Image 1 (spheres, helix red, strand yellow):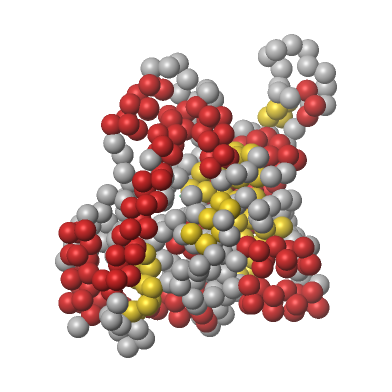
Image 2 (cartoon, rainbow, N blue to C red):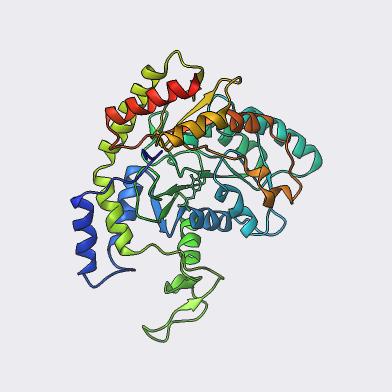
Length: 381
Ligand SMILES: *Cc1c(COP(=O)(O)O)cnc(C)c1O
């Protein structure tokens, strides 16, 4: 099976992890801060906080931004369920904003309309979570303007967008209050499981670091009492164990060394897909000229007359690991039971009916790509 995405691990990564195994520090050692510094430098943010996975990062991001019972959080229905669940972990009320069909990212126009209504009803959101779908930045500049006008925070789910750029700057560096990256094996770089929260505000970073490790601090400035000795720590909030290990951070550093090659390979293969697929009854996502996608996914929309389920089944039977990103979150039974229904977000539902993600990963050969395209051509007939 040619997978839709997969990790790329070489002797370089194996050596890096092996070194940590013999170092005496499996977790809470020097590799996590080193990985944090490198990701902060890559994305040009003052701070990066490593976490156990992006889901944990989104949860901590919500908490640091003050989300709690009675808060309102909005996100895109075309995302992984984690983008919505993080708000519900905190007891917030969740809602969705429909997508822009060209990019499958949360639509700024739909957001503006919904905000205007919410202002009249007194139901403005506290936090909006845009998703950089397939590795292309959502319209963060437009959303920043709305955030400033209506007074909500932006928590960017940049899980797909490690190394991506918007208007010449790295994703997460200029518009969002916090941005979250994922290092799951199918994403751009991997740490097995892992995530990172990018932050510009010192106060938010303090909250994230505190909540990542049980709400415990050893920093005198955060304690209520004067420390009686070096054993002493205080739990000043209810936190979690959302830490990343040094093994993971070492793997992440080694993967970062190879990131330019990963991004170039994805770019080369995506451009080749564009050429090979021209003339078929499908449409690739619009790639906007002011952003550089990390190309986590090569997602296409099949023409309306095509039976997507049949094409999907034929591809899978031929050993091509196509996938569908995503089933709209509001149609999941959990969210359906909380008041959402088919028809609520028509663009998201239309995207879902025709979406297909084709295999794309750095080590994919042109022969494999030709096989994908040939099989798709046959399946579409
Ligand atoms: C993968 C993903 C997540 C969750 O990432 P984990 O690291 O697996 O927790 C969240 N949001 C989006 C958009 C994702 O693709």
